[in-house]
Length: 256
Image (cartoon, rainbow, N blue to C red):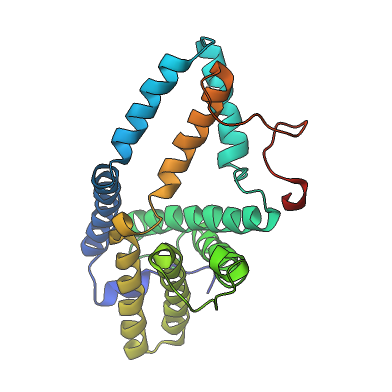
């Protein structure tokens, strides 16, 4: 199971060209959806206006070395380790989701484009595909049932869904049916294979085409915002209160 190409059985009723075209369409859906979200809610206008404000309010000019150092700190703290979250459990769950999902996506693209019909591609690919999906599911279900704000702080049941939950729900459904699809193909049941392949593709498509209405695009915005905040703190244009802890973090001790 962990050493075979999960997409090879699809070629029995879907051509490799169609599978590859589907991935290209999903990439375009994310790009177009993100651009639409930027323009529809005037996020791009806000970013540009905020950039102009901070440039005018800057009290200390920053050189290239300063900007590179800020970018490195942003990458190491805010992006790689999800330092924006004060709660350690939220940081771990998001790290599992992010690194698992990225691993799953990369191995999916490699297998579909380089080994679409090979039942036994290089073993590292299906192993990482399964590992990535499982990591994302562990982090995602942990977040969905135990860490969502409306569940933890507002006392709502985990099954109460709002639009903000669209991304996590479609992500979990897509990855869950990905593994179920893989399992039924190993069992050799052609009817079940087609049914669960359809469910897998349906929720995967919904995940990528719902970008303008879900939190999918936030993974692109957050690095930009984190970099901007660090730059503002460095050049003196920030209107946020100064950190209250010696390490420069804004998280209260009870959340770390």
